[in-house]
Length: 522
Image 1 (tube, rainbow, N blue to C red):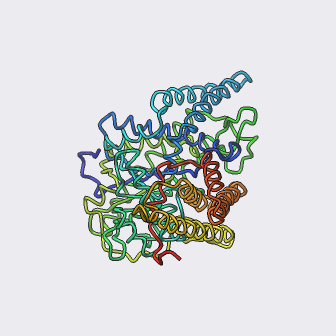
Image 2 (cartoon, rainbow, N blue to C red; image 1 turned 60 degrees about the horizontal axis):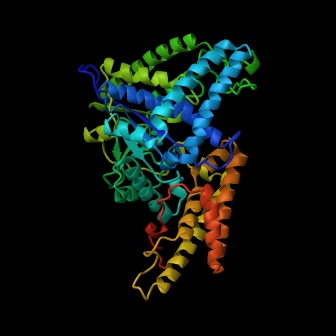
Image 3 (cartoon, rainbow, N blue to C red; image 1 turned 45 degrees about the horizontal axis):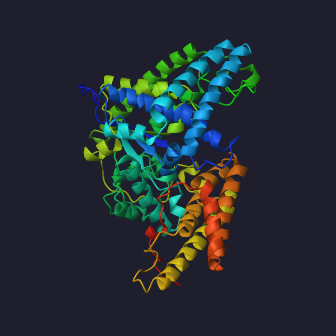
């Protein structure tokens, strides 16, 4: 929805990227399903509620929302849904425990939040997240951004598997929401020249990069190389008002502190107080103080966007585009007050005469400049590939290359053998019946090369868990491939069924749709 005022030139676009790696059946605490349920309760539920409330008021084209297929799969998975319902009930019990132990302010605040989340979940989410997102898409409240199946760092991925993950990720969105995204959030904003051709072939018309990839000039989308695929860049000047670890809003003294826990209940009782204040010395959380800070930061952000649109439009001599982009999990999970800030910002921007629209709107309305020869880039440290390809994760780079090559070689071998066995029926390759062994082999390879494992190692964030996960899926690939290569088909089927019990995401995943080797079977 836009304001009738024309006082501010150009368009503002907010982009949110929602993603978690596959966590179901892979540990609970401190890393594992707990991560999924915390993010679901603190971010996905309240962000969806905010967007639904605004949509019910007739507001539309609010933002571009990226939902990775691997996250969507978990939010629809019966195991995760049951686990989430249990987690929400336990949250309410922990709040009651805090009240009974004497911390009535903390207990009361958390009890109200838990009750509201339980009611929302039981009313709207018990059949999965897809109906929730579908309602927002159909109401045109959001533009849905898709992506590859399980969030690989695409520049380092074998082009054959890269194309498969993207096409299957877009197909998964169509299956869940009746809508194929035209825009994507490329995992980690990773890019290498030539990927634009793959995007074009898959029907992708626009994607996100970080601001430095466009040399800091993010005021217009840019067609990439000689394609019609447009790259939109994150405006760091505006995004860092929120995102900056040194001066971003979430670090304000009045906001709830993310890191300090009450160990008896697992709740977070304190406000930031000061960045150098030890956890035990932090002041108690005060919702009223936090609400005042939200209002202050909403006003500051709106004025920052307004000034940026005016100055950038003057600089380029035409109405400019400003894109602010964040992880969805920032809003609520990391920054407790984030959903309230988000709702107030989305109301205040049009009221200040600022046109709000999606990336698709920006493309349709001509916020596109001259083409750019986009080079190797990401939104990680250094804006290059060091997080996913640096010395610290060279072992994972090597592991990924080995696993992908083994999986593809084995699938090609199965393709040849299946073709030979089917010659009498006229079937060729893997074009006959689906093969659950081939499907699980491919599924495990896709999980092994998730970009999350290298990120967690490089950032020293649950690095042990990340390495364990990468090697676990690599082991699955190796043992299934060994059984296939040894002609032990019954064993291969048994192994595939066992791994599917834990890693059965994307049940429609079909190895027959993997393109053949460009070099042909060996």
